[in-house]
Image (cartoon, rainbow, N blue to C red; front, top):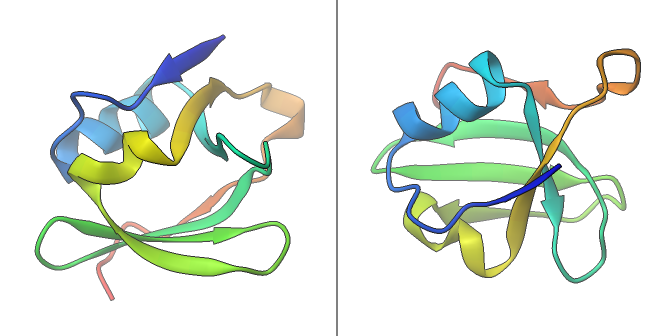
Length: 85
Protein backbone atom coordinates (compact mmCIF):
# COMPACT_ATOMS: atom_id res chain seq x y z
CA UNK A 1 0.00 0.00 0.00
CA UNK A 2 1.36 3.42 -0.99
CA UNK A 3 0.41 6.61 0.84
CA UNK A 4 1.19 10.16 -0.24
CA UNK A 5 3.01 12.48 2.14
CA UNK A 6 1.02 15.44 0.83
CA UNK A 7 -0.65 17.20 3.73
CA UNK A 8 1.80 15.88 6.34
CA UNK A 9 3.15 19.01 8.01
CA UNK A 10 4.60 18.02 11.39
CA UNK A 11 7.02 15.55 12.89
CA UNK A 12 4.20 14.22 15.06
CA UNK A 13 2.16 13.32 11.97
CA UNK A 14 5.17 11.51 10.49
CA UNK A 15 5.76 9.62 13.74
CA UNK A 16 2.13 8.47 13.75
CA UNK A 17 2.48 7.07 10.23
CA UNK A 18 5.87 5.41 10.74
CA UNK A 19 5.67 4.12 14.31
CA UNK A 20 1.96 3.47 14.77
CA UNK A 21 0.79 2.61 11.26
CA UNK A 22 3.89 0.81 9.99
CA UNK A 23 4.91 2.88 6.97
CA UNK A 24 8.40 3.45 5.56
CA UNK A 25 9.77 6.18 3.29
CA UNK A 26 10.63 5.54 -0.35
CA UNK A 27 12.01 7.90 -2.99
CA UNK A 28 9.41 8.48 -5.73
CA UNK A 29 11.97 8.86 -8.52
CA UNK A 30 14.38 5.99 -7.76
CA UNK A 31 12.08 3.79 -5.65
CA UNK A 32 14.97 3.40 -3.19
CA UNK A 33 13.94 2.91 0.44
CA UNK A 34 15.15 5.26 3.14
CA UNK A 35 17.59 3.63 5.57
CA UNK A 36 17.92 6.40 8.16
CA UNK A 37 15.39 9.00 9.25
CA UNK A 38 16.36 11.50 11.96
CA UNK A 39 14.33 14.55 13.03
CA UNK A 40 16.15 17.87 13.22
CA UNK A 41 15.00 21.14 14.81
CA UNK A 42 12.62 23.47 13.00
CA UNK A 43 10.34 20.86 11.44
CA UNK A 44 12.93 19.14 9.24
CA UNK A 45 14.08 15.54 8.86
CA UNK A 46 17.35 13.97 7.74
CA UNK A 47 16.87 11.04 5.35
CA UNK A 48 19.57 8.63 4.17
CA UNK A 49 18.83 6.43 1.15
CA UNK A 50 20.11 2.92 0.56
CA UNK A 51 22.44 4.20 -2.19
CA UNK A 52 24.37 6.23 0.39
CA UNK A 53 22.98 9.66 -0.49
CA UNK A 54 21.42 11.78 2.24
CA UNK A 55 19.74 15.16 2.63
CA UNK A 56 17.76 17.35 4.98
CA UNK A 57 14.13 17.95 4.03
CA UNK A 58 11.42 20.24 5.31
CA UNK A 59 8.59 17.96 6.46
CA UNK A 60 5.95 19.88 4.52
CA UNK A 61 7.99 19.40 1.30
CA UNK A 62 8.61 15.63 1.64
CA UNK A 63 5.68 14.77 -0.62
CA UNK A 64 7.52 16.21 -3.63
CA UNK A 65 10.24 13.54 -3.52
CA UNK A 66 9.05 10.78 -1.19
CA UNK A 67 6.08 8.55 -0.53
CA UNK A 68 5.19 6.10 2.20
CA UNK A 69 4.86 2.38 1.63
CA UNK A 70 3.39 -0.12 4.04
CA UNK A 71 6.28 -2.00 5.65
CA UNK A 72 6.35 -5.75 5.70
CA UNK A 73 7.18 -6.84 9.25
CA UNK A 74 9.90 -9.26 8.23
CA UNK A 75 11.55 -6.88 5.75
CA UNK A 76 11.57 -3.65 7.73
CA UNK A 77 14.90 -1.93 7.15
CA UNK A 78 14.30 1.65 8.24
CA UNK A 79 16.38 2.84 11.16
CA UNK A 80 14.67 5.78 12.85
CA UNK A 81 16.29 7.95 15.47
CA UNK A 82 13.61 9.77 17.43
CA UNK A 83 15.97 12.23 19.11
CA UNK A 84 16.73 15.35 17.03
CA UNK A 85 20.26 16.01 15.74
